[in-house]
Image (tube, rainbow, N blue to C red; front, side, top):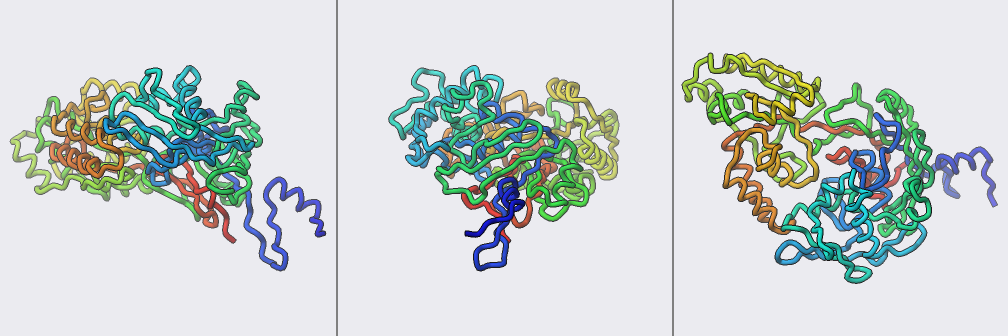
Length: 510
């Protein structure tokens, strides 16, 4: 029998020491993933009913599972439910639970566990978290969540809404091992477990979190035995650890945050977010469509690179690209001055035009670049004004502005989330624009089943209608950035800023 040296034995236990295959001189790839998170001293929470930030969501996706999940491209996929059906009226969803779901101790996961976790999240334990939003469509009647049998769960929602499945894919709907809660009480998250690919082994708060693989994971045994998370409050600490190869993944950068001299393994994707110009159409010069067109016609995608560098991608269409519904941006057919001349306005009309925006150095640079372009192409002087969050929100709500630079961040990856809020009948629509054809198309789209191709067609039709009236004009999509070692396969960065993996395949290559 071969005896390993004591030092290597200890390293195997602590950090996955690579040992040669018998008859081979090549070392085995490591089986421990070292993951660093910057900008925090800990995982904010491992209670899925409370998880809302990218760090908590990323780790929750390793520990728990729900009926459905989001893939790295934010598409809804089966998870704990192998399939589902939707009633003709669009209100009742019947989920068929996989028979091979197991908690780490081998106990079977049934429809009752899904029901109990949903009811917990919708109760007092989840009241301060995301459940009141993501599970708000579930009816509040006594039969809204029904266990038909151990492998069948029925959920009734208050009204037809195709985006329900997308909301159900967030951690609020995830299943917690009930034995962990009953055994550990208030400290149960230190031992968090579900039917996900990993569970918590050790959590030394503000130091590290160690996950080990669930031997009964339905997707197959993960090749990575252990995932160890480390916390770096300062960005330079995390970058140093990555460059020194002490960690393999570095996440935690906010949308629009960049890395100077990015190292190998830098990943950038457009966030589920968009920066756009909002025109106040309720009064003043921007109530006229051709005035809005004049200001939009001066725009050039090159301004994004000039002002924001790698912090953003130029908007590729009217909708955020993460939705997968391609609607080209509005394109001018005249010069900016020709649009302005067609409405016969004098220069004094724009004497007090102000572009308001929140405090952000990249947005401020973009605003100044826009103001310079408007002065060059229209002869109009626009004052750029940065406001604190409270004043900015108040000015938008009161519509006491001419132009605003708005950063929208998505709640869930469905087109309805953008169109229904930014241009629908909600307080988030700060422009004052409203169109009956638009509202009807969005409402009808959400009444169809999620896979119905008519949804995308109706969203496209609504977007084109809004685009023609130009109450908003997309500028860019903020970038999210993470570092992932090139030898690590099947692990990726999502537009939510989370780290996702095909954990039954994720591994290091030599």
